Image (cartoon, rainbow, N blue to C red):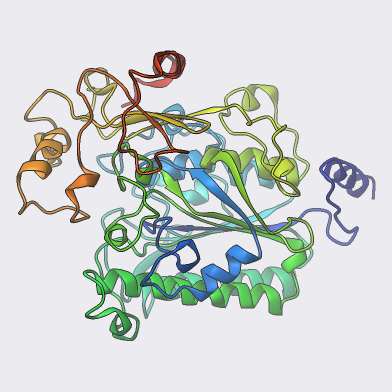
Length: 478
């Protein structure tokens, strides 16, 4: 009872209440792979039908200016640690550079301190091929994942459950949602009911390869340049609806925080609708790092739209605050995230992150080449301002040893119309000046077309100085 009174007093500080029967909420975190902000009908997409995303948005706090990393593994590292990915050594998605440092404290490890049972279903991408880095070694009691970062089949996947291989049948996204829902039902109705749980569900779709059952593709044939991609979004939407229905049927919507978000900017869908944003996954414009983020907790989080600048590394400190966990000072001092709970009841302008700056950096430079890539596809957000450099390095052969010539390809995409890319409109690839920062006012210029750096040198100076200090601390990754 004493513990329950402590949690109730903590939560009441932000105007919320937790019943004595459930002192700590269950947490379900869903991370969608490569689905962009614009791939939701409620955000204005003229083609897609996403009734379940739309319904969830209406029931949630929608963080409308929510930033993530430009690519996959870095976002996952920041989400799990509350730190920028460079703090935990994650600089890429391949070649071992997605292995999250073993001394990094993870979200499930934090939650387990106060009695949470923890599970992950789906994409880990933070070192799955190395035993010590696997999620069941990083705080998850149950871990059902792919055995390899390179396994790309969406059908009949071979998975590993806490290290033991299993053959599964069916479409992989359906499999992971089914497994997560079975886990949730068991935690509520099984012999271990009453213990709070953290369920992390990370999809592999709508990331390529673009493969999905034909019933999802058919509505988009002749209407979309990527009907398989939009069919994959439709499949995710259907599965999300099943998950929400399960939480409601188990009568735990008021005891469960449901968070649903994307892992980076849009990919194939941005030629249909990207909310007017420039850029996509992997580059420096806003379209690379802004995604959707919906937080539902019935009776506790007021459905609304927040315009505050928020980010993926806010998730860990927020959930620590909500669950009454006091982080050790040596740990909290490493965090770059802010507690979002003051936004649960109102779009507060007085919370700790109100005047923050948030840095993003593609970091996909070749190993040991961080210095040469300091300004390559980097950006800083501060309020309405976005400071960025959408540039390659000067080496025309950059990255060839990895067969990912990232800087050379930045030039080629503008010159070679036959070169494969995620999107057709070359406007998303255009480079900024190679030797200086570009500055955009997102309030008056949300498409980032008018560089105002020369008009606001004081803003450029303040934001670039912040970046320089950050790079000195953290920029020399693997």
